[in-house]
Length: 222
Image (cartoon, rainbow, N blue to C red; front, side, top):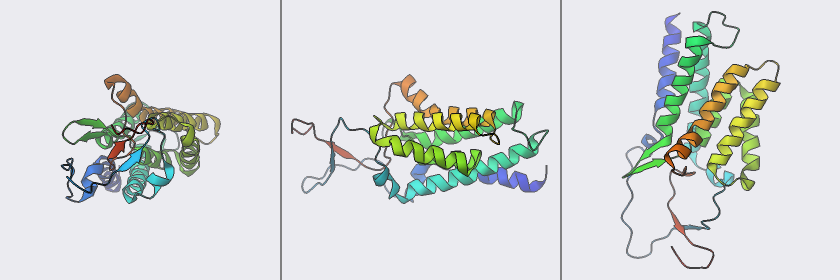
């Protein structure tokens, strides 16, 4: 394999395994002590856990996540094609296992949040970028916009990831030029944070940055 593709692999690993938290560029990541006066917080209904596409779309770090995952996923597939016996077919065997391992490791790095205690962040834009990079723009963008279109009726980011993975899997099986086995692997990667959340019994956090004040429906502050 040409040296160029090892460079692609190194770039892909850097893009996929660069923790989102490091994009704060030295800013404080541990919880700040509460202010005694004039503390402003964003209020929300604790029963409303549906993803907010407009609120998330204005965050620049989400789009950095998206584009670096798209570029990293595309680079991984380029290298996988070179390692495969038939570059025109979907990766199989140890090549497919290696691709799945790289994508899962990248997802774990983005998902785990250590700020005083263990938290699980749902890397939605990162996984949507992977969909574009690994499966192509048609399947990737349809899965992305389809899941966000349904987000107002979904109970949380876990459900959004489940829908995104399901759309990706269905399209990879339905579209003639798609690679079904690659779509199955990617769907499993997208569902991975949901599975971890269920096994650890910890709710996925939809926002990496915001701290909310919970205001129950009876008007009393929690």
